[in-house]
Image (cartoon, rainbow, N blue to C red; front, top):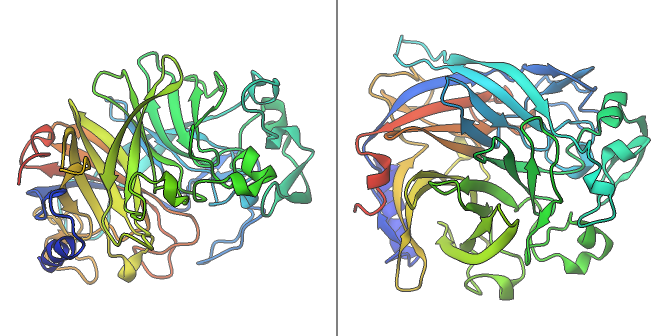
Length: 445
């Protein structure tokens, strides 16, 4: 348990007394493991025309779209899950030919060890593209954007991009399909009427889509956070207040589906706008009312691990596990043997320290997972009956049942090899079962 001992020492040195209520992981076990192979493709417009190959992957992908992992995940409670990839290839300037939307996926978890390192499989059952068929993004009201479907040729490169000379696919133009040039979608929540709220990073905006993927209303900007890719900041860079790719990585409904909670990856880059000036660890969880499409002004302070300055730890996702209790992912940007911080924490919105910062309890170190059934098998470099998630972008946490969470990754395809050196990561999805009901764990020390 060396990692846990080191973690406890680091908390004390970093001055986290009163915020972290427990530094030992909650008793847990790996309950399932499934993988969608990195070779999975969905029929669609040719993609990957603005990226370079790596690990034997040779773009472009003719008349197909790769699945670059998931950034959001919802339990459909019928054995399937709604899975949201991000904007495709990691940047506005290289993802104009990647169609954004969501998959319905069916995992077949391996739940017992058999002496091998072979996981269960995940099947893509359908894909629903996001679209602007209602022309909301060019109606002269609210937020107007020049999207890929409005162009004759894809754009690539920084800012608004340059004309690539490559014609935009007819399918994208005809259906006004949205692409990774238009939005960087990172999180998803389902309303009672079956519509979806989606958090993204270029605004950052909150987007409201129908069950068929159609944009229903104007993108909702944040009143303070302005990304360098926001339309205003592209025209006037000095107006940016937030870091690039640091938008709404997390979006979760409360227990009653009344309010949404939007969580950016990190605090603003403008120090005066941070919840605690001088401390990059502390960010805000923003309450949003989907009925009025306004932020309520109710915010909660959350302190990440790591140093107060030069902090590169980000929030990967958040989900409600009952009443006012939520689980969050904290992660660094490292993978493979370099990975250090991949953790699940649990908080109760009613429990803060003397500084008004949410108390948090360590649920599990995802680099040190107990695997009593040996589901993972003899993975290289691990002790017997241990499992690890050595990935950069662990970005999905979802409730399976009262004691069980699902955790999945964004692979950043095809650029990272966290699991096996030299092989691009596949989309991995695991189940973790805890000995104690999740809703009871937040305050235990």
